[in-house]
Image 1: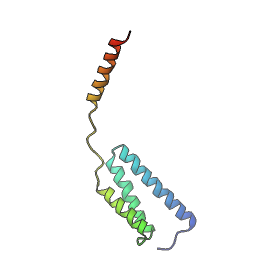
Image 2: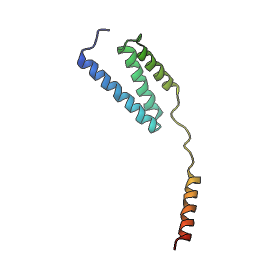
Image 3: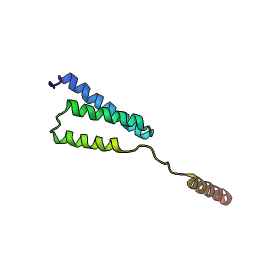
Length: 98
């Protein structure tokens, strides 16, 4: 693979950042399909355009592979007990208020 021009390298880095930010947003939104697509595209770009012998590139590839294996979804915590406690505290304060 020939070396990229400075402009191309800049846009590659910016697109890679954009993909990783998109993966972060997908993670927050619990959108596993988009998360994995962004991580896979980032990994593909690292493999294709970066030196695989570089230690930081190898570490990044390993981390992205681990992220691809993870699951995004999950059970959200139930906050009903916290809401009940807050309501009870509010009622107790209203009863003691002059």
